[in-house]
Image (cartoon, rainbow, N blue to C red; front, side, top):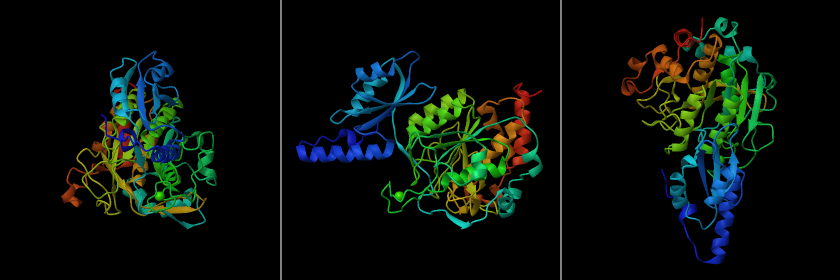
Length: 421
Ligand SMILES: [Ca+2]
């Protein structure tokens, strides 16, 4: 699908204006993706054996980036090129399986920043602070600390606060797609990178999400991938880089608490690929209080998660949609904060990791991997039906996570698929 792009379609003849526009575009792209010169970014999946450099040369586009151990590449068109026409030509080239636009995805919590509520934080303190939430979702300490195999869970978000030693100690792989080569620390940068008037609204987001996963699945090692900056800005390409990294290091579950209200075909394509690779992906519906699922939650093979309050009623901000598989607590969630303290935040981004953590911890009790489709089939049937409390959103919130029941169903699914004795 090709969307008109202001940057790629406008032709301005006045030389000075043109230079200025080029400069602004280059700065925007440099800020968004770490690359200069590109006017429009195209994501492609290479056909087997295709050479990305020669294909790029053929269409006069720049090979900007490649994802690890996978056939996905990022090209940039240059100023003056008709990106839409080039994309059409590339789409009909047998060297590509598909060529789609890159697009922005953001942490849905753009208007309400999280915050710190105190300096002392450890797992036990959080268990006490979140005790009502944990009993709401039928989480059991005995199960979470029982023996099992190693199941890695990837957190694709703003990174992890440098001072959160407990979480770093269980981080077995990390990757930074925002500041290449740097440790993926979650921290404020004192910049309004998306120009919405709020500075660093994404800071703390990834640390919160990783901490929620740690609460639910304390024995699952973490894979920390920073794909969003301190304003929560990311791109479809960074999601792809993060997911391919998660697959490369053997993660079985990924939480992507990001979204876009735009349909992003590249994400649909990558999620077909992650399915084949055995990675199950969770994403939140979003916080627009609308009948809407953001991308990637809107994609059929994503575990889509809505938010409820402590009474199992739809959280005031949560979206709803018929495809929703699950819902989990999303209001006043306590977790770790980027600066080393305890944080509190509300949003569907914080419902997703309860479900992702519960899936990972359930997989830990199986003897081998379970296909993502088989895992997804357990989500809705294992949850508690809360339609009676939400008559206006009947069949639109999925079922509320029930960790104990989910574990039984995933165990049964693994036995049926021959994954467990
Ligand atoms: Ca901002």
